[in-house]
Structure formats: C-alpha cells, structure tokens
Image 1 (cartoon, rainbow, N blue to C red):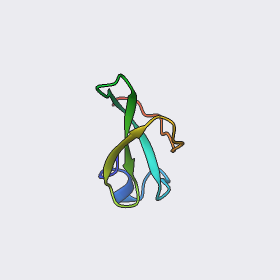
Image 2: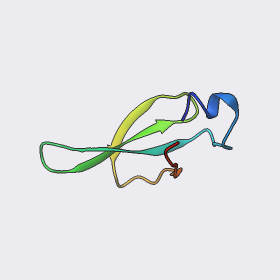
Image 3: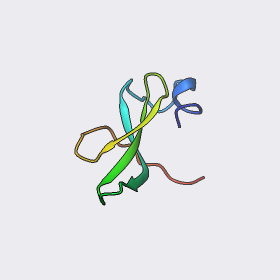
Length: 60
C-alpha cells in the first residue's frame, strides 16, 4: 500500500503509523503486530497495546 498508494498520493494517508493485518506471537505467548510508517515506509512490530491508524482494504 505504501509503494502503490502513498507514493502516488492516493488514499489520503497521513504521515503516521498504520497497523498491518500481519501478526505473530512471542516465545512467551504474547501477541504483537506489524505496522508500516507511512512517513518513510519502514516496517516494524509492536505489542498490540499501541493505537495506530487502520485502513481496511479489499482484495482486487
């Protein structure tokens, strides 16, 4: 989404973090999710206690 939409000024994205639907669990069973920074395109992960934007999408 970052490369296709944000870089082409489509979708009215803010320069902020957006949750991905990708998630994983730690060795201790804690759930964390990945997010994309729409300011620079970096991808990281955090525990799901942080509030970020969400953009629902559909498959084309």
